[in-house]
Image 1 (cartoon, helix red, strand yellow):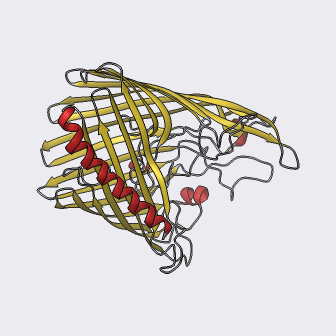
Image 2 (cartoon, one colour; image 1 turned 120 degrees about the horizontal axis):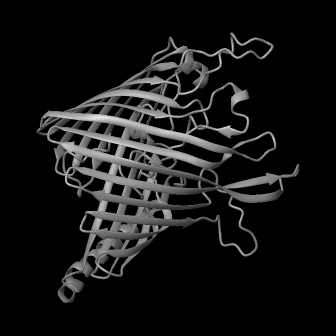
Image 3 (cartoon, rainbow, N blue to C red; image 1 turned 90 degrees about the horizontal axis):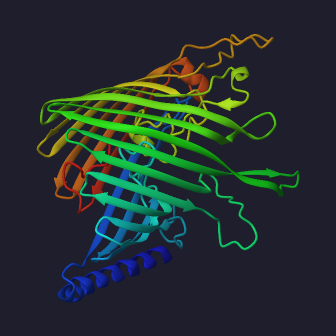
Length: 457
């Protein structure tokens, strides 16, 4: 009840502000404008073997989740300011008569931007970071809560030909006077990145350098922190997109080095990091309504032969990307899982078509481990290592979308994983069980036009 009252008040304030700025301010400041951004997304899912192979007698999970997001942005000649709140919930998570405490009302965006010149600005506050194809930094719009960062962003834009962004973040749990230990899990203590984009006639090239600082702590037997420090890993890479008529291609390469605070040496200190992610794909569009994509991606990993990984780790991390877009929609790899594991080689083919108010895509992935998987049944008691085949399985993803009306899309999907014994060895479950996933989703986003009404797939 309290959450709904707060949300209603926010909506009322936003509408009042919109009227004030559009009817009053614009009369004296024709270059100023305000706009409300409202959206609603609801998705019902069927999960049986989602993220891990289904087990014997495992019952499917069925649920419906939603988000309602309301934002307002005001644009003036020398500044911009925006705020957006959202409520994220699973249907039935609170009793229909009880005080509503299960919803998640939060600030999705809250930032201000100052334009020093038409080309140079600084944008500070809670905001989304989405670059290139969202591999390393993405908005994660598929997830109900999305992904956002508290960051200061320096921006330089030169007529869409050259763009430079530099971001700086430093996180704390609360206001601090004596300590700087950061206890928030699954988040960075500090982050800095530099992104450059250069547009040529038929080729676009971008480069990214990201310095990721994670909190490292040592505690005594009572759980008291005795040592705390930041350990940094660096990600550097380039991405190029080439378009030549009906054929286009995308190639990228990222290399990670530094320290991995999530993996420790025998001494108890973080291991050295040396990892890579390389991908290449080619897209052929024989007609406007049809696209055919062939591609492959290799993400390095750690062998389960522990004698070869004692002092360093080779497992690449996509960090803060929209990982649902890559390596299959059933999220077996790199979606809150598969970190510091055997890596992945993914060979894929995608078919996409758009016809009037309909769109459809069919993706096929052939998965292999990038590093050796231990065969526990064959490895001898003396420690002699025996590896399993690196083949992990095949996944098929079907996605359908319909443009109900402008700004409203209906999207549905079905996916099935045909896993191997090697996949079972690293993720559990059973190979002979059916592992599948299906969903039906409605998206109401008035500012988005077809065919982009649906989420990125």
